[in-house]
Image (cartoon, rainbow, N blue to C red; front, side):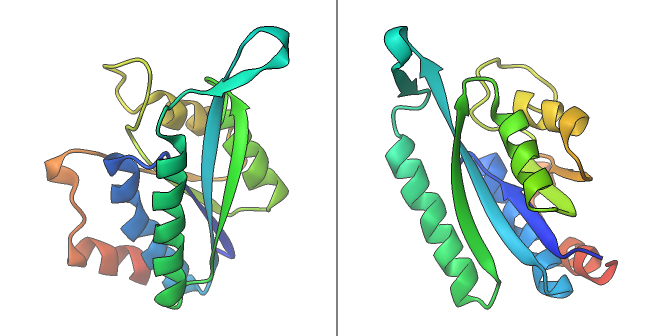
Length: 158
């Protein structure tokens, strides 16, 4: 059913909670797992831009390490770092999903969202509206830690 799965991550703990689901689905389906990180840019004067997050290089290094671990574990994984204007990450991720003919996007429900208090996080909420394929939104919080049973069920149901 799934040939290409996108795991969209901002490097946060909540994005990391979605990784076991993306990994289990990709492994059970023999699917490609495309890891997407959107480097959000604040556009300044005269066309210059600055990353929204000061530790952007560290985040990309962390995600790259996660991709290498996936590969070492036998998952067909690749990393794509994209850039977009601040608050445009969901559209940038949806564009990659469309271009790569993704069958599913897996994402956490909260990350580095600039507006605190949103129910699912601004990028995830927007993805639910603009994505060209289904979105699996994995909730954050201690109660949402994936159990082995949940991962087995996720992998076995597809």
